[in-house]
Length: 230
Image 1 (cartoon, rainbow, N blue to C red):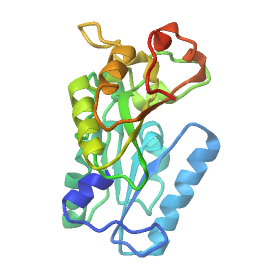
Image 2: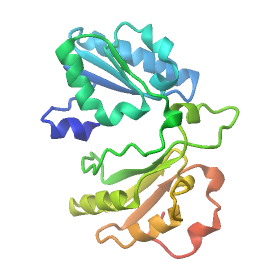
Image 3: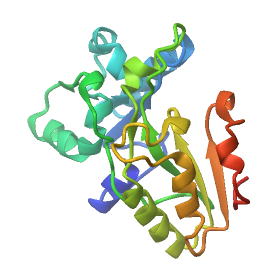
């Protein structure tokens, strides 16, 4: 989302600074995260009462009625709508009225791709390759907030990493909601191990990290070859 605004000529500032637009990417894994999301949304409006405050992400997706009670919010975007955030924000600025854009994530079968993201403040780049989860564990709200498993097209992932490597980034972190499920929604068999093998061939990338659920780290397929994986 930062890259989208930078490409459109917006200046990114720290949250504590006075800004015209505040975008809060909310979390809903625990009651504590819900509470912190509400607090920071209200704090944003205190920073600048004339600003546009935008709530996006998981808490918005699963708690529409609670979000509607927060008067400080000018625009609410669910999981599916984040890729069009610039359009919705500029509409909010123009029409100056509270708006909610929220679709049922369960019906979404395509990965919401932001395209190649080259902006990073770190020496490594986090590359999201998958969204959603099909496990529906009793204690977990994630499938309802993020929908079912949707995998990003490998050609788009590889293109992004190649562009990042040209900018001097030598380390990538492969992540997702349930990254071990990568590829299960493809018609043609293509799994996480296949993606790693392709990334491993990219010049300039010296280290690949995996960030995923500990429950599946013993999958033997990940140890089929020696990779630049840590």
